[in-house]
Image (cartoon, rainbow, N blue to C red; front, side, top):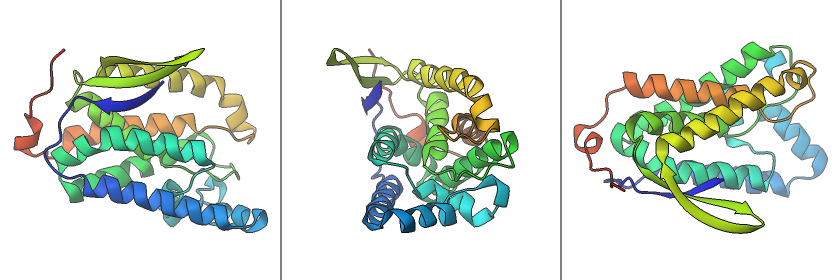
Length: 221
C-alpha cells in the first residue's frame, strides 16, 4: 500500500520538502550515470558503513538510494506527509527535525550491528521520522492509499491506522531479519525505520510548533 494524498491542508509552501526531493532525485540521477565500479565506490564512500563510523556519512547516506523504486517510494511518502510537518515546524526547524530523525535512524541500526561493512543508504529513516510526527499531530487526517490485489484500487483510511500498519510491519520484519542483519547479508534496514519513527515522535513533542498551523482544521469523514 502506498499513500498518494492526505486531507490535511498545509498553509505554507513546502520549500524544504521540495528541495529535499529535488536533491535526492538529482543525486540518484548522478549515481545512474556512473559505471558499475565507480557507482559501487561512490556508495561505499558516502553510504553509512557501521564498521567505519563517520559522522559525515550518517548525513550523506540519507541522500543515496539503491534503485528507482527505493527512490520513488521514499519521495512519495515524503511529499504526502512532509509538507504538513514543515508547515507546523517552519522551514528551518523542519530541516533540523528531518536530519535528526535520519541521524537517530542510523544510530539505532549501528547499535544493532556496529560491525557491519554493508553501506546503509536511503532517506527512509528520516521519512519514518516525518511519519511518526504526522501520527502525533494529525492522527485523524484521511489518507488516500493505492493498493493492489489483481487490480489496482484506492481507498481512504485514518492516518493513525496507516502509521500503525507501517510500524507493525517494520517491527515484524525487523525481528524476522535479525539473523540477516547479524550475518551481514544486507537487505532492508528495518531498525533504521523504527529508530527514525521513534525519533520523530519524541522530537515533535519536544520542538515548538507554530500555533496557526497546529490548530488548522483536519477535514472530517
